[in-house]
Image 1 (cartoon, rainbow, N blue to C red):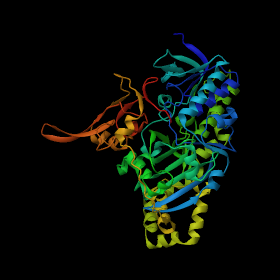
Image 2 (cartoon, rainbow, N blue to C red):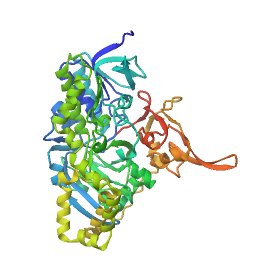
Image 3 (cartoon, one colour):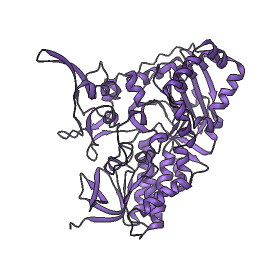
Length: 556
């Protein structure tokens, strides 16, 4: 039998979930090696992003890392609003009650500065127990002996064995797929997020948003701004920039043949944003990622043999209406996985830590937040096509306008938006994302007359501003079926591709063969931003680039 290097624990990925797991393992005196694919942690990561500290959580990020809020976060969110949009008419609801429910604090963050700070703290901690952090290493799969998972395999290193493997390698997890714990079959199980980080001086942010230097705001946007695509937009204030983006159900993007960069531009150029973003407009970075819909994919048993999954790799992203939480759940899960291993350390059964981890997730209440039973019950009826069609017809009728348009309805709707109970059972239909917000905006809103003079960069300019270290000769995606039927959806859905743009990853062209004309799809992986969209909507063989290769985010 081949002898392999061995560690008590190997953590794959140094985002919030992996960092929490590694830090807590080190606290328990466990020899822990952390393997990170980027040149440093955060180079491959993107988030909206707000990180919460929930009062009910077993662990929060500042429990594990002293000084986090002062040194790694941007601004605390002190104001939270949602805007219901119908054309240029907008009705705004205050979401303070929902935002502050079970919330100790909430900060805006950028992943590159945050994760790189976490990496340094993790390296200090794990070095004390005989481990450390290695960057530029892609873990490409699981090492097995006699059919049982015993370690990991890498592009850059020999296989490594471990008593515990923590898969914190994100939404496109190679480990989850290798273990058979995740598949990429259904677009309705995923969201796609696209974001621009917009440059803005701190004093300008304070003035335009009417806040103090130690305050921040979060704005959400829904309604007809995005036509019929199910999802919405966001704007968060950072220390010296804004995070402005959109999040949509991937199946809805495909169905509507919507192009992500155009949906982002629709938000950026809406008159409502003119009060905050005006004058010289400069994007620091354009980015995108997939987001798992925890209501459907959060794994109730996120383990297999010695492997445990945390964060996006386990589908632990809570997206329920205006509630968008992921990093905090990854932190809790990572720390609980470490505690589970500490309790079962020395147990000969390979799944002892995994079973204990799953129990701790349930007992801590984490799984009930990720997969609320109220939604499981409501979706059976609420997402039935016949029911949805009836509700849509009623709302769009004069009766619906009268019912929604009265003063009592306005108060009831604002209370409903602020009810965690109601939000957790909201069906994933056009009604909640588009139809109802549009009617609210039309019936209760005020007309916005500001002139928005923003001219967003072109897709070509956005790609050109990104940093790449292309792995020449080693494409990480292979297009298996170039027919439009199998892979054509990627041309519009890929955030760096478009029907009328020839410089992105996916392109379509009419080709004549034997007198018959057909549409074929071609692929160029150089502009790829590694979001994973095409792995779901096209027939591809998809994997991450080798360590340190591919796109490198400066903001994240």
